[in-house]
Amino acid sequence: MARCAGRRKGTAQSVSARRVSWMIGSIAAVLGAAQSVCAQTEVPEGFELIEIVAWPRYAFRATINNCGELAFTMQLDESQDSQEIFRYDNGSLVRLTHDDYRDKGAKINDDGDIVWARRILPPSDDQIILWQDGREAIIDAVGPDEMTIYTAINNLGWVAWGRGPQNGCNGDAMLWDGRSVRRISKRDDDRWNLSPSLNDLGDMVWSRMNVCVNPWNARIQLWSDGKRSTLPSAFTQLQNPEINDRRQITWSAAGERTLIELWSDGRTRVLTDRGLLANINDLGDVIFNRTDDAYGVAQIWLYRAADGRFMRLVDDPDANHTWPDISEWGEAVWEWGYGPPERWFGIIMMRRIRTGDSQFDGVIDAIDYATLADCLTGPGRVDRLCDCRFLDLDCDGDVDLGDFARFQNAFQGR
Image (cartoon, rainbow, N blue to C red; front, side, top):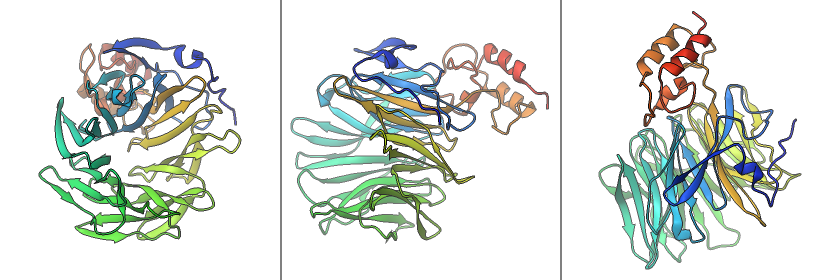
């Protein structure tokens, strides 16, 4: 397998060259052009890697929706109170928050709604923020003795999160269904209910953890049709569950080393005996990170359900690549970081290459031509192209005559 040269510690050349910088507020953000980040051998056919952000401070926890939009956090200076939420949409990077609070853990749905957790210091008040149509709404707020963490949002507009004491061993899994907030778990024993995930059927999963014993232990909880159940596993340290609309659930489990389990049709099996922080889409594709034995850093891997193939997406000896997310289109996003002595952090996206084949059925034909006609916007960047982004062939944020000319050259006449 060909190896990517990676980034050389102590230099900024590999993350600053070949890019266009511009000012957003008080920072210089770096947006990747359409070239690949590294010469990879196992990126799926029809996809490419682009670097969205490279930054000398934290850029982390990126998530992706089915419109190719991303939401993530960037820390703008040395203070954690400079952590702000950013949104990326087809080449446009926009800063959403402008405050002196800790905004982090952003999740985005297909409507472009974004949810995240906010901490205000002092006096350590915590909030759950929902961003819709350019406005913020507070879903939950707690005082200095409690905290809110680990958000999730689905395409129904439901929001889930964890709420518990600043110093304690128990906490609740909370759910907002667009009308009211309710507690899904019970705070009646020494358990933290953490890391919720929602699907579009109204199901919710989370990890029910006993963090005040050594070794800690946890089970995966499923809330479906108003009933709660515990999912089977041969292991006792389970965390970070994710659920899709087929009610397939993945999570990380601690064995001889960390592995990934998959629960489907009432049965649990080990998907891979090496992996962490898995995310699953409705196709059953699973993206996760795995520590490379030679490098000692985490790299991103993809399991494709259609052919059962495991594909290594990153081969970088210098940087940790972690916290991946994947959409139903197979597009994905994750964070990377390395250092010291010089620290760099960034966000990478694996996106579909735009060829004019809007259906991704292998031909560019009359169906794609009709889709192009429906997607034409004229010149000038358009917010939220969504599925029409696949016909933005020059990747400039619109579908105009320039894209039509490229489409004509690619048209196969069938």
